Image (cartoon, rainbow, N blue to C red):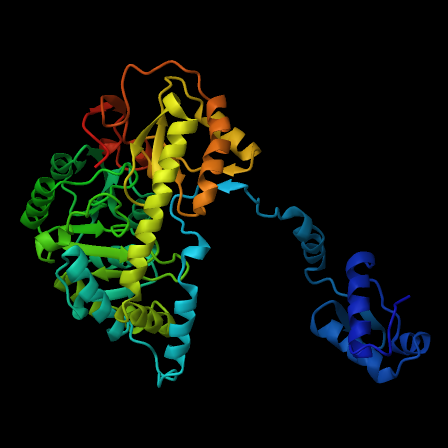
Length: 502
């Protein structure tokens, strides 16, 4: 029996349709006959039209089929697979786990976003005479490109104009567009190892030959790049990801000279230059080159918000020419209202004020985390990267540290950790202790909880070598690229010396 309520706001034919549908899914078999319209109408004291409407909806959705002079039968079309999925979908899908502490290394706390100001500027933008009936400019709104050009000239020494800036939907959008455009000229891509895995994956997907290039105390090893004959290289020179090394000016000039001599392209990812806490970052590599052999990538994700999904590129004139000839130029990559709100945010001085505030706040968070690491982990770890970005990197001082156990114990205690090797390749392994997503007062408790997991994995026997890059350590930088050219898939350990904490 179906329970139908004549007083309900839901029409009777909808109530009947829903009841029969549920009955079909739970109890009927393929080919079973439904009661006749007349029988259902009599049984539930309904009009014939009401029952016909319910049966018609079931027929339209494919639950039943009509047979001439016979009636309605449960449909055979995909019924079994549908019922299986319906019965298992809710129970088989695991819910996302909630963590007590999450050390995500590229996150800001939600309270750090200037929400009141952003809402006010958004309302101001949408009430102006904006043409919502037209397609936005594919390269990005002029007013936003003007604001970014002025900011980059003053803060990073970038040589640019509005004509060679493209507004993008973040890093992946930027790097994919370059990979697509540059394919007309190049076919051999090189990248730092350890390095950002997304860049490698994007260029591999576009069919480039890939060469991994090791990182030493001076950043990318230019001599090795020269030997590789790669025509395009991706680097993070101001704050190497993930080691934190800064490429000195001498190495930058050497790299530029090499790429200029072969007509190559450098992709400079300046992903977190605003978040340097002790020293001003070295001016951009692109500014040294004057822009013809360097594509400069930036983002608002690290200092403002990863959620608004806004990045930008400054491209050489020849690459802009290829862009202007492609179909990509016709379609905006970021919504019009987001672009105009961000442009107003920059023009009215809120961006500069926000950067000063967020730098001061994250410098405090950085200091609190550093002190907590020293307090709770003490002699069991070394800090190998600090002073910039949203994370501090640590490595154990034990010669037999159990990394797999650390993952397991942290997970069991609802602590989410991030290891550099998981996303960066090579043999450089460190815990990326992100602090940006915490409130200031939460950091010490989080590190204390993490330290209990950490100390379970330490079999303390001091290493003969000291920490990464501050002494001598043997690493094999090619494991991440085991699927590429055999001639570059080396397994011979390499010894690296120098200093990491620039």
